[in-house]
Image (cartoon, rainbow, N blue to C red; front, side, top):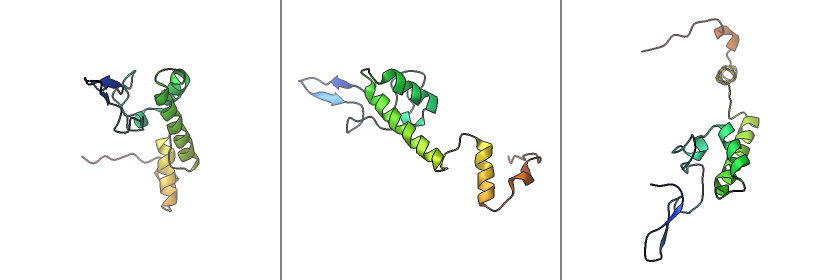
Length: 114
């Protein structure tokens, strides 16, 4: 099982399962907790905050370090308007940038294509 840790492969050789470089990245799959198997970069903000708080002074500190980097990137993206927690806000901004008044669509039902 790939748990992100080094394992002995016999004859004194060590095989690293984290990534080729041995570093934790946003694409590293989490080997623990409620998001086990999910890529670190796909975890919700609250989970990344938990990792920073709880794992910083542990054997899993590399996950906390990457979680902190991802949180800083997300904060930067929000400031730059690249990420939006609210879908309605994102849709309104998209419409305004396209020169359309979002209020035109507020009371209209959404039609779905099948």
